[in-house]
Amino acid sequence: MRARIVVVEDEPDLREAVAEYLGASGYEVAMAESAAEARTLLETQSFHLAILDIAMPGEDGLSFGRWLRSKTPIGIIYATAAGTALDRIVGLELGADDYIVKPYELREVLARVRSVLRRVPQPTVPQAAKAETGAGRRLSFGAFQADLDGRLVTGANGAVIDMAKSEFDVLEVFLTRANRLLTRAAISEAIGFVEDPESSRAVDIRIMRLRKKIEADPANPKFLRTVRGEGYIFSLPNGDGN
Image 1 (cartoon, rainbow, N blue to C red):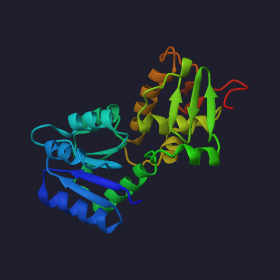
Image 2 (image 1 turned 135 degrees about the vertical axis):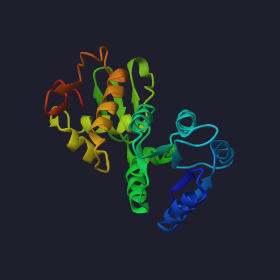
Image 3 (image 1 turned 90 degrees about the vertical axis):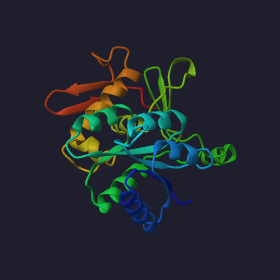
């Protein structure tokens, strides 16, 4: 099944150029000139990824993206004007998977789309298929259980931990490389970030959000520890991680 993308952009020429380029690259693409129009599309269609302009008339991209993320496990890429670093950081804190800075080249858009789509959860596997393929990759840490194939984390008493895709991406990197020092560059590469000056900050933001969800005391983490000047390490006692 081809990935479905919605481009929400109020500039007609840019919107059509992005849609045409992604369509020629093998994706199914829909367009909307506003958040309101995109909401109408979502009443009858589902998408794997949304490219959202932040500075749109009416409801802005950040507000719409927050609503979108609350409704569906969709990948989100924000488009922001050059020089507005604050918007980019706010977008990452709201759970965006990536961002692009205007003016951008269409090849860069395609690279970021491919990177995010590699991390977007696939459609739910029917129970019969699960029975044939087995339980999948499951790892434990403390009171938590992580289903890496189902991209789900549960805590005490089986309670599901609300976790954005970008947060789960980072957790998976650490769980599959437990007790190893990881630099920010190594983490960025593992989660498919396109290298840019903001990538280290983006990793730090995801780790900060992740700590709030898995650490009893995020200021004094038990699992996800900082190694000053070098990076991070996910500490697992012997016996955990099975």
